[in-house]
Image (cartoon, rainbow, N blue to C red; front, side):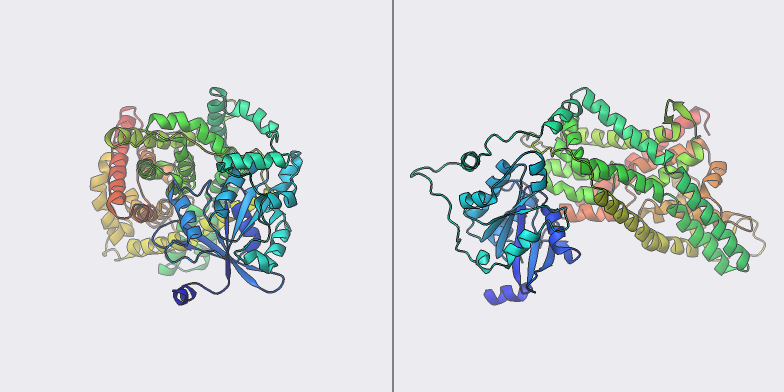
Amino acid sequence: MNEAVIHLHPPGRLAALVGNPNAGKTALFNRLTGSQQKVANYAGVTIERKEGRLALPSGKTVRVLDLPGTYSLTPRSPDERITCEVLLGTAQGEKRPDLVVCVVDATNLRRGLRLVLAVKRMNLPCVVALNMVDLAHNRGIRIDSEALATELGVPVVTTVAVQGDGDASLRELLERQEIWQPTRTLMPVPTPPGDELPDHERVRTLLERLGLGDVAPHLASDRIDRIVLHPVIGPLLLTALLFLVFQAVFAWAEGPKSLIEDSASWLGEQVGAFLPQGLLRSFITDGLIAGVGGVLVFLPQVLILFFFILVLEESGYLPRAAFLLDRIMGGVGLSGRSFIPLLSSFACAIPGIMATRTISNPRDRLVTIMIAPMMTCSARLPVYALLIGAFIPQRRVGPGIELQGLVLFLLYVAGICGSLAVAWILKRTTARGMPRPLMMELPTYHWPHVRNVALGLWQRAVIFLRRVGTIILTLTVALWVLASFPAPPAGATRPAIEYSIAGLLGHGLSVLLAPIGFNWQISIALVPGLAAREVAVSALGTVYALSSVKDNAAQALTPIIASSWSLATALSLLAWYVFAPQCMATLATVKRETGGWRWALVMAGYLFALAYVASFITYRVALALGWG
């Protein structure tokens, strides 16, 4: 048995980080391990496993495992179950830790110490990292770590995970040989005979002995919450905040967007003037520059959206938003706990679907998965921005209210309303388990760390550019090939693309899509757009570049579609993208999370049906209003 364990796991001692959510556990993990991290999944499940290597000053190496956050060792979700199984040594393919580092929020000892007592009962070597002591000091909380160590019977060190040397004391502690031994050198203060108190009573008594029984709450956060969580003012503030975010997405991005657009056009002109007429020139100007440049132009808007999401997350506002929406979501059969996964889906449905692992109710988790793709992810933003920029005029409809930002806001609202409607239907047609009240932590407010926001924006930019350089570039090149061959017959009078494989495919699909106002160019773009939504923009750029009769086709896509499409067609395409599941990676994630293709296919079927119906109604109403 021991030989098998040695074979399955790399050599070196294993220290597992355990702590409540929002205790700074992952920040401490990042501080300890830096870039020496490996991310995978636990065996048999899709829960993310993060392991890193810590090089100690003595030259020794320690493997550090960042376990999912938990409030207790009585699991209520798949994430918490993994933490318990790893600590018990029953997790498939996992070695039982040699040491447990309990990361405790110094500003909330009462909750964190309950978990420490539970871990101690597992007879594993254990130390406590008292994190965020700087915030505790700012609030007048003074903790005697030596006295706390005596009370608990385990070593206690203080850390500040967000500071450069904030993990120094923990590193020094891990050098000590005795902490890795099952027998503790520190013994807890004996309790009176028969005093078998529950953990919360033991923690209360312990804190009273340390003079921390009456620690005052964070009054500033309480004062802010009286306004932010007000039953009337709170939802109005949330609506206004989201509205301002979408206004900024257009207003702030106009300058950099125009710069990228002009640069792409200039590059196309220069390449077109340098290369002779032929396939190579068409490939570079009509394929690469027109396709990739058509997507790259929306990078500023994506970054602005993520800037606001990161700031709201860093400040501690997002859990408040979940609390505010709990009543609304309860009306459709969900709880506020579904809010965080759904909010994550505004960035990308994939991490949003993976975040549903924290939902303990299986029925609520499945419903949240099924409606997550209807949240307006960042991949939809290039499509929305293209159509809004082409068909919605730049004008103000009120003080500081841009019409384009208002339309974008309404598209986001449409996705939210559609998802709530689907959840309401599922509530009426599926068995609902025992209602579970929303219990979640409201962290204290604090100013966002500039470094964390900047790092988050950099990561999003890298992800976006990587998609442009891999998936989008590959599909753009593939579409150019399909749109360029075979060559048109002699005496052909129409653009060459209409005689190509892509042109024939587009004309065939347009028969099915004509009732919702889609022409053959849109029909072509939707096919590669199945891989990723934003690919449709690069596909349209390539299709219209090859359809152009001008010598230089490298020009901005927005004015081309503005002159080629009717407003009814544009609105119909917007309605299509509100619902259509045009992302194969999302469907693959649903298959992985639900354990089979059944729910992934159900999702694809009902979302494509919704998209077609919504587009049909939108197109017909628009025609009736004379917008054709």
